[in-house]
Image 1 (cartoon, protein in one colour):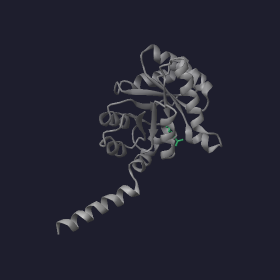
Image 2 (cartoon, rainbow, N blue to C red):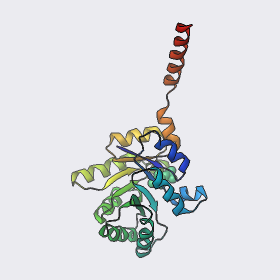
Image 3 (cartoon, rainbow, N blue to C red):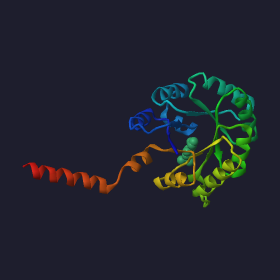
Image 4 (cartoon, protein in one colour):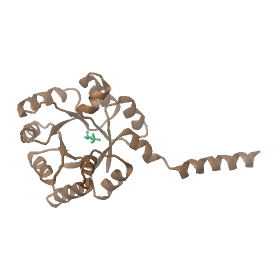
Amino acid sequence: MKLFIDTANVDEIREIAEWGILEGVTTNPSLIAKEGRDFKEVIKEITEIVDGPISAEVISLKAEEMVQEAEGLVKIHNNIVIKIPMTEEGLKAVKLLAAQGIKTNVTLVFSAAQALMAAKAGATYVSPFLGRLDDIGHRGIDLVEEIVEIFDLYGMDTEVISASIRHTTHVLEAAKVGSHIATIPYGIFKQMVKHPLTDSGIERFLKDWENAVK
Ligand code: E4P
């Protein structure tokens, strides 16, 4: 399973990229707005940090306008993936963009039917939102599992990005059900490295070492 970071904060991206395990980035309008900076400028900076798929989302709701926005965004860098909302207009845009060889990530996916439609339209990625489903009492991970099963059954190329991840367990569950990618917030990346027994183990090794060399 590939690991992407779900943020538009370049400092966070730089820090995790330095670990050598980061394979892509997803952003969304809320994450970009939080940075209070020019959208294209942020995206460009991200492409300079990570050499992998960088999702940038369109704001328009009409297919032709989405395509126009996408055409502007892909000029920034050839790693740009266009994030398109899962709507009827979104499907049309995905189809048009696929015909131009532009990669898409269909976002706000909450059912296997939506994922199937997106894949049929030619989406490169689909993003089921685990956390937001869990929030309303559904098991988000069951949706990821169902989508992976359908795509595998028909040998579909579309990759599944487990999104809206809220904790480490989500990441592990996504890995166990065969999600191709998990897009993980910065704080969860930090938690995934930590274990109190690792910290106390290091402390003890160093203490024993110091005592032995005294
Ligand atoms: C992913 O592409 C989405 O932008 C993101 O995971 C949404 O997460 P949230 O539900 O925490 O806002």
